[in-house]
Every structure is written in structure tokens, then in C-alpha cells.
Length: 410
Image (cartoon, rainbow, N blue to C red):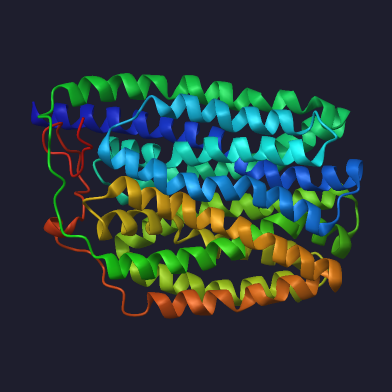
């Protein structure tokens, strides 16, 4: 009987994680859409490098402020209802961004999308942690959903906008509508599960704030590398390879698709070694991968783009679970920072990269990204790997409603 119950629990958990992963894809497609729209903004509106950097900044600025706020709210109250709402908001902003020739309104619309994405991630990470029972591999698959959303963004944007121009951007809202519906079964099941739990459950563990700060600084550097590449890789590919927007779309697709593989690899490697070791070695691999992307000519360019994506995404889901384990009493805040704030900061640095590119060249502007993984590697040296359940490491096994590793009080 216990074996049957265990099988049923695993099936239920897998279904919930699958739905959350697909919903995550439907949200993160709009983070990827910002970079995917840039070549079309340049082509139709003749924006400069600095101007398109401003669009990325607009998507990131409000998001960077909103992420920790939503994280704090998630730590205080469970807000599962925010998942469908934020998904629609993220899609709506991108859908409206192509309808106006006004640069200011374009900034407003992508900022609205950024707020929607910011609202989604802390609560979705909390929900994923609950339904997965704290499994690192399950959280890895949840992250893969976001990576696949990133990867689908250039294909979706190119398929829609290349057909009829920016005026067709309202069609880009469709994944958001689908994602908002897909999360509803998980939220209903979670509501029934939490209704049977004891209210006021106290989070367990002791916060390791010093380690969390070092982790966050490392993730900020990784964010600058990834957002810097994703913002300009399409334009850089057009310069290096020719072929117009098609070569740029391919480069962005490769960059995002490699992230899906990287998250799966990272979760599996963490089961064999510890998360800190896996993340540290991924930064070592990132150095030659970005160098090759910037300097190696010919078709090998795409190979190095794929390697850079893989290396940058191997530690991505590990950052999230490490952050949650370093701050076991503030899981929502940790999720908001590792999934959101630090990612958004990367977008805030892109105007500087764009300004350097306008003054010199894209190659010159992207070259400093090669150094940043070295700094991330140094920050990870000596970081502890949480191992004791009492210090916040969640169990890898499914857990019952009254023994959740973390649960926001109502």
C-alpha cells in the first residue's frame, strides 16, 4: 500500500512540476522577447545601440525593484493567485510594445511586462519548492521551463514580426493566456493540500546571510554576462555572419536553447557532486566560451555561443536552491533575489555596453564580459554547501502537507 501511495505522490508531483515548468516557459518567453525584438526595433525605427539598451533597461529597472518586494510579500503571505495574473501582465506589455512609434511608450510597455515577470518568480519558486518536496532535479526541470521559454522567444517573435512587422505584436500575448490557464490545476491542488496543513508553520533553519550575499554578487555578475550577450548577440551575429535577421535569430535561439540543457545538466551534476563545486567549475568553462563567442570567426561562432549558454546555465537552478537554503526562513525573498533581482541588474548594465558599442564597436563592448566569470569563481571559493536539514536543506523525497520544508503563513 505504501508503495502505491508513493507512486501516486510521485506522479502527482511530476504532473505539477510539468505544469509549472510549462507555465514558467510562458512567462520567460517575454524576458527573451525583449532581446528578440531589438533587431526589429532597429530595422523599423532605426534605434541606436544606446536606444535599444534603454529598452532592456526599462524591462529590468522596475523588475529589479519589484522582485524583492514580491519576495518579501511571499514570505509573509502565500499568494498563488498572483501566478496567472502576473503571467498575463508579462505578455500584455510585450504585446503592446510594437503598437506605438513612441519610444517613451515602448519603454512603459516593456516596463509593465517586466513587473509582471517580477511578480511571477518569487511565488512560482515557492510553489515549485512545495510541490517538488525540495528535489534539486525537480527544481532543475522547473528552471528548464523558463529556459525553453527564452529559447522559444526569438522563434516566436521572428515568426510573428517578420511576417507583418511590429503591428502584429498583439499576437505575442497568446503564450501568456495559455500559461495563465495551465497553472490553475496546480493552484487548486495546492489549495486543497495547504488547507489541511497546520496554519502558522514556522520555517526551520538558520539564515547564512554572509554566504547569501556572496552568492547574490556572483549571480549579479552572471546576469551581466548573460543579459549583455542576449541583448547584442543578434546584432553581433549579423555583423560576423551576414544573413540579416535570420543569422541573429539563430544566434539568440542557440544562446537560449543551450540554457535548457545547462539547467538539466546542472541539476544532475549536483546529485553527484555538491552544488558549489558544480557552479564553480561552470564559471571556469564560461571564460573560454565567452572569449570564443567574441573573437572566433566563422561558423564556429555558433558553437561557442552554445558553450557559453551551457556554462552560464549549469549553475542557474543551483543558485536558486542554494539561495533558499542559505535563507531558509526567507525562501520567497531568496527566490526573488536569485531568480529576479540579480537577473534584472544585468539589464541595468546594458546601456553602458550599448554606449561603448556606439563609441567603439560591439566586439570592444562585449570583451569585458570575459573577465566577469573569474570574479564569480572567486566569490564561490570557500562557500559552504548546506547539508544539514536543520540548516535549510530540503528533503529530496516527497513530503506531506504538514511536514513541508517551508510554508508561508496565512
